[in-house]
Length: 109
Image 1 (cartoon, rainbow, N blue to C red):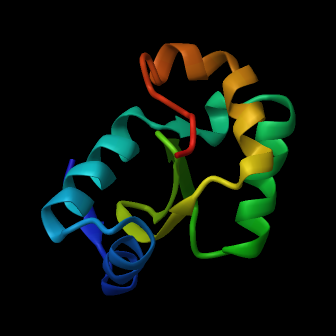
Image 2 (image 1 turned 30 degrees about the vertical axis):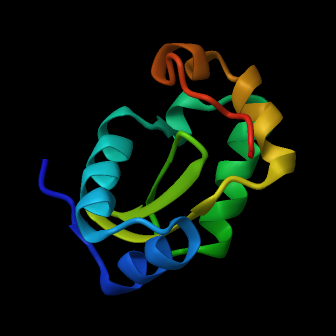
């Protein structure tokens, strides 16, 4: 899959996560393929996805991978940010967390 990283997403990844360009491209593709999507979510996590869609209309493809929320418009990464602390527990309770995020560490430093 060919993922396009917008300048805005690249800038946000550098600011928020201190990732370089190669890391951003690698993680964007990994998140797009392996991340938790709206259709994978249930309960309060699904409501969180719905809220993100209402806020970011152009992002029609949201993924959560690791501790990061990735907002895609089709195959273009629009922006990304860390998962809010109050949402982490919903991810851990989601059935797909155990399938898709095997071994991921959700503890914040």
